[in-house]
Image (cartoon, rainbow, N blue to C red; front, side):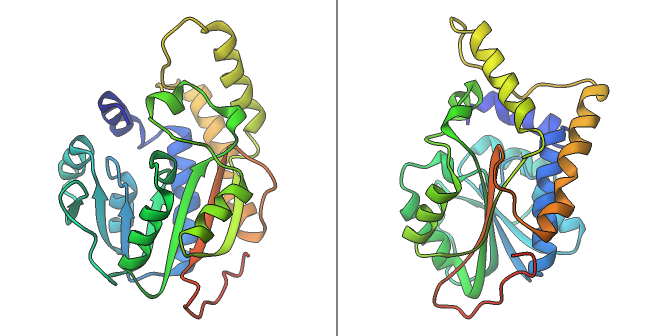
Length: 249
């Protein structure tokens, strides 16, 4: 991710509709899993890590960006793992969370195997990724994404990395027409402009309705899965472990 985007993320992730709703969906799943020790892999500027700490979880953050780790330290979050120089500890976590991380790496299998090794027996992986190549935008370029996924392609990647999917679903579904219209409208009017992030401050009269609509999916995803959406979430287990599926699966 470009360095200037970390400062913008740090500024907006407290209240921006997408960050708030995605975080709450992930928190709901984490509460159902009830892990004792969590690794937030690709923790970014640390808001999810901070909220988990506030809720009493033991959390370790990991990132390879100096800028991201600096913002985590501004939030007084420790311990942190600098992935440029430190390896993940073996068999140390009950849950690894990867919020929009997998799309950044060339070698999916290598990352997933490293994450697998850091999990304790019975451990779980929770991850989210962006969906659909046809939603590719300036955000993907400036965020240095390698790909977007479909649910089948994410399932295949997870299985090739040694995990067994427990629950997979699209999300950010209710707002998919709005997201698509914004992306394609931007493409039509900015063909000669340098790619730029879609992330920018919004007035409350736009931000709050978007957050409210997206947040409706929290209760939907607790009961069922969604067949389409701008993002995908997946809960996966080490296949050698005896697992009890989430009641929502």
